[in-house]
Image 1 (spheres, rainbow, N blue to C red):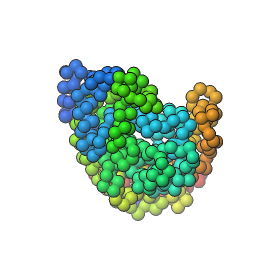
Image 2: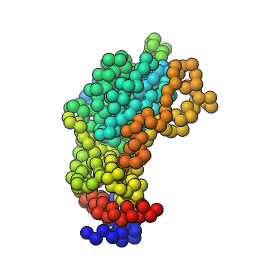
Image 3: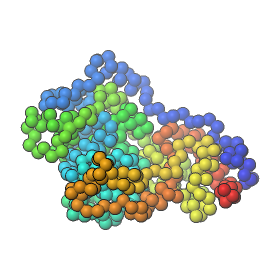
Image 4: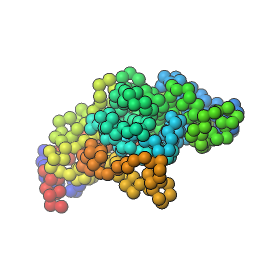
Length: 434
């Protein structure tokens, strides 16, 4: 191939992908019909925020929850109006108290850690594994203190965390485990669904996730007490505990975290299709991995033994030293070729302003500045070197969730990558000149 700079679209050459791919839209006639029936019934929600048979919601809420219990093989499923609400409810339901420390990944959406702060507890960030980007059990163990009460394991991008190791650590230290499986519904870990192996876990239902109801979340647990407390926090606990006869009032501060009948009706139909949605992304990812094989300095996603990946994100790692071209320049060239949904960073939560300045509630640094925080917790750069290196120079993610990926779409993406790699010398020269 001619490797002159004129080949690349970034230098004025022809784009590899000239027509944008269709956006992901899993909503079909079944969901439309289900929503229509709810609208025509006039019952868009049937929750009452008091101890009453309708405390548990209307018929579609309860039907969706029962179907989720059967699908994921758990005793309890509890719907909520967002996964952020679900995380807040989960942290409260496992009994986290002010000043308690909860170990969490920095490489996740901000709500994972903010849900901990919500209960005036202290997020402690442990580093991640370079292969799966999930919590590193070695780093988790190193961050345990006498004040640690829980671990939040984030199943990032569609792959489960190392739950055997994390649950073993939790058992040794008497900790609760929460699975933030927002991005990985349908992923398997040693034959069981990710999100179901912890004390409590669950999934996001917002618009670009595998199950799409607009907004929403599903909490799953096999613990009767936790399930009861999740339902109370979801629906105005403080107004319900008296009538229900609840004596343990810890964290019985309730909210309106309730999911509506329309969303649950849609969710029932989406759940039937989850296996197909997951299979489609897995096929696309396998084709992409095969197509990108052999490219210097590019590492495709790693799937651990006895696990499956559902590819909310298709995560790549660049060896920028081997490539001789900075990540930013490679990304610019790929975007110019028409590759959509690329990201050159994800999150390092510990470096967000809230943690760097330790200001959350009010202006005086609460909870870190108060007596409930019993030690100095560091959020300095350097505490999570794997996550920081990925963020700073090597991570390149493709949002598989944005499009319904046909074989033709995957082949075009592969063609764009190979075109850029064939012209790396031109990119190198342009980066050097800049």
